[in-house]
Length: 274
Image 1 (tube, rainbow, N blue to C red):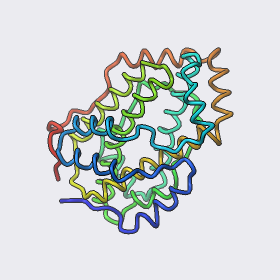
Image 2: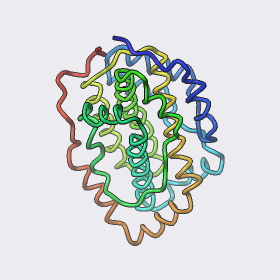
Image 3: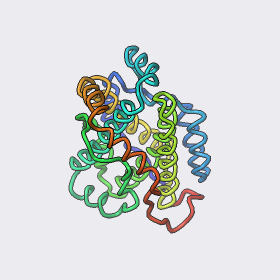
Image 4: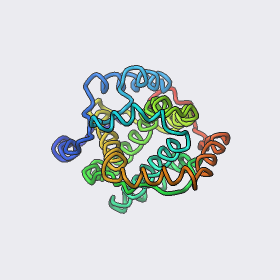
C-alpha cells in the first residue's frame, strides 16, 4: 500500500504554518533529495544526503537571532548546555501536549502501536523548559479520517524527524562549541535507523513533502518560543542556572555514556515496505 498526502493540506495546514515569522518553506530540491534517498530504502544514504544537501537550520532566523547564534560559541559551556537542554525539553513537552489534542482513536493508536517511538532521549534530564506549543494547524494532518493514514503519517514524521534533527544537532555542536552534541546527533541517527527498520511506509512524494512541512512548522514553533516569546525566561534560566544547575548539564553528559534505548526491530532498515 502506498500512502498519499492530505488533499487540502496547503489550505488547511501550510497556510497557517506560514504565518509564523520563523517558518521556512523547504525548497523543492530538499524535498526531492530526501524523497529519492528514502525511496532507495537506505537510511544511511538518507541521513548523508540530508546532511549534505539540506539546510540544517529549518527556520528563518531574524537578523538579531542570527547574530546571537553566531556569537553563541563565546558563552561558557554550561550556559549553552543548559540552553540546549531547556530547548530540547520544550520540544519534547510540546510533542506530548500535541498528542493529547487528537481524537481518542488516534491517541490510542499512537500510544499502543508504536512502542519503538517511546523512551526517546532518556539521557535528557528533567528540568525547566520554556512554554511551547506545536501549532494547532498540524492536528488535522494527523487526525486523518483513515486511521491507517494517521498511523503512516505519524511513523514517517517521527522517523524523518530524527534525520532532520541529527543534521541540525551536528551544526549546533559547532555553533555552541559543544562537541558532546555530536554524540547526541549520533543517537538521533540511531533512532532514525531503528524507527525506519520497524516500519518504512511506502508514500508518495506529496506525503513526504507534507511530513517535512509539518516538521518545519514544529521547528518554527520551538524557535518562536526560545528566540522570542520565552527568550527572557530562557536567558534568566541559563544565567542563573550556570551557578545553581550545573548538575543538569553534567547529568546529560553522563547520560550520553549509557547506550540509547532501542526496541529491537524485526528486520534491517534496508527497504521501504508496506
